Amino acid sequence: MSRERDQGKPSTRAVHGGERDGRPRVTDSLTTPVVQSATYWFRDTQEVIAYQEGRHPSFEYGRYGNPTTRALEDKLCALEGGEDCVVSASGMNSITTLLFALLENAGHLVTTTLLPRMGIRTTIVEPGDYAALERALADGCSLFFSESPTNPYLRVVDVGRVSELCRRAGALCVIDSTFATPINQQALALGADLVLHSATKYLAGHNDVMGGALVGKRALIRRVRDLHGVLGGVIDPHASYLILRGMKTLALRVAHVNQSASRIARHLEQHEKIERVHYPGLASHADHAVALRQMSGFGGVVSFEVRGTLESASKFIDALRIPYIAPSLGGVESLVEQPTIVSYWDKTPAERAELGIRDNLVRYSCGVEDADDLIRDIDQALSLI
Image (tube, rainbow, N blue to C red; front, side, top):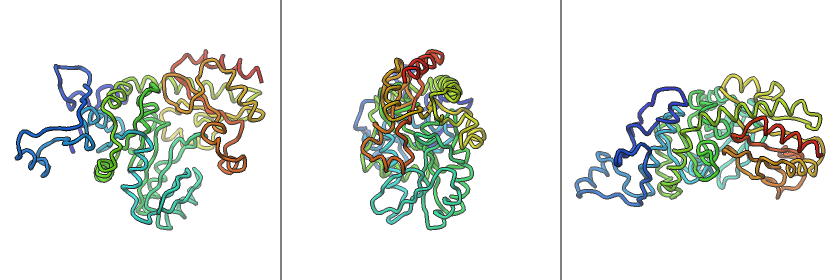
């Protein structure tokens, strides 16, 4: 599959990448149209044979592709510098299809997050523990998978170092770059084999659509795409259209939330009612030096611990006036959540402690509101506890 290399800086590629020449042209439409079709026809049987032999381009059937979705895949290739991309119905569908496609029977997965797999060994390593990673890779690992930055403590994996360790061991390196976005981090250029995005978050950017994307080497994407067509986790063309539309302002939105989150993190670090702030743009963060080397911005999410108990953090969240209490991130609206009672509500205190999730932890995703307004709102909420 030929992928055009769109030139220019990320903000330009976010607008024009994958669309100017490759999209379907309908009545000279400036925007990529929604091709609402589940089936694609052939003019004659010779065209069918040519398609089967790879000589005629066609999507054939909705499980195997869509012109609107193809434009989105091309745009992501342009932004990430990847050879190919496959977009699916959700980020989790992209992850599961990736693992099913690339992990052989009785394979071995090394990850920095807990991801139980049937019939596949998993080894959990802490971000930054490269000695543990080397030991795991030496034990026959076939794939390393990690977010960077991670959720919710925003640990930053040294992608170049991890990629080199994986390459020596014959393992694949997969980085979930959802929190970073292609604007703040280029994981493929740093050495990763594949980069994953929950397109629901920053790529779409408006809290109104779900999608997932996997970008990287053509041979690997082909294996994932083949299984993707069988499993059927295809994205609706209108969802692809919404993500395409959202991505045109990606660079603008990310630049704004980078600045807002940095200001909020610095402000909170000096606040007497905040115990600790987790943000890679702060010198106090464990991976600040790594983030400086491999990221051009530190993202729009700030995690912090309110001084006090679970109830103290809840009271603070309930007193906020601007952000919505919601579990996602990356949209134009600011969102806030207390991980203990959202993502980890079914865990016991001991289980949460083992995972490092403290009861007073708050995750704040900056939207595109004015940073001064967000800070004033945070201050008034903190004044009530």
